[in-house]
Amino acid sequence: VERGVMAAAAIIFFAFYGFDAISTAAEETKNPGRDLAIGIVGSMVACVAIYMLVAVAAVGALSYTQFANSPEPLALILRELGRPGFATFLAVSAIIALPTVLLGFLFGQSRIFFTMARDGMLPIELAKVSSRGAPVRITVFTAVIVSVIAGLLPIDEIAALANAGTLVAFAAVAICMMVLRRRAPDMPRKFRTPLWGLVGTIAVLGCAYLFFSLPTKTQLYFLYWNLLGVVIYFAYARPKVSKQGIA
Image (cartoon, rainbow, N blue to C red):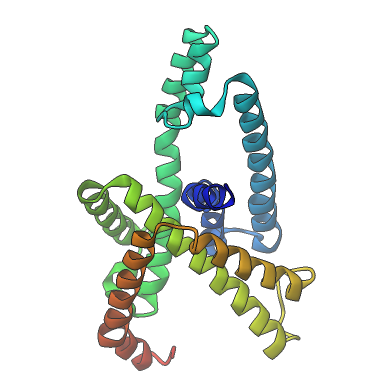
């Protein structure tokens, strides 16, 4: 049972990794030290509370065995309760809301690619902005990459692979935080982690546990994907980064 619960938690982890996309807007925020903390922590607390209330209501309304394999569990529950009108409204609302989620991820990923291009890890031409200061080139580049991946690969495998990458990224952030607190304790910090040793260790162990709860195929795909990334980095990106004096 425990293995099943953790495997499910690892698969639906994508419901949470949108919060970190807010951090990519740091350069475009007037007061990042205050605004980003409020945006990330505040939205996460609110969403976790909503997720828990919806889950409790769903399990209380209908046995989980009846909606566990449904692609639209909440709508199914409402229909079983004799509320087909509300079920249709919920389904339509989900369709309308989905593009806003995609735009949020597109924004975050385009800013990551923008920084990579500025540092030489991608063609520097992609880091140019328009006359209004918008990174149009990198946004279009990101949209094309995402469209190709979404059009050619199964969505369930994409979600699992994205979860694997995000779990490793979160663990890497926690490790870097602990290393910097040791190596540069006096560095000015807009964000400070309380009980950094305990929080960082729990974050790394938790992410590792969820990662190894993912399907074995996903873990192998993740390994191949990162080996390819390492080859591209040392063959293409690192020489350009070194020329700019960044590494």
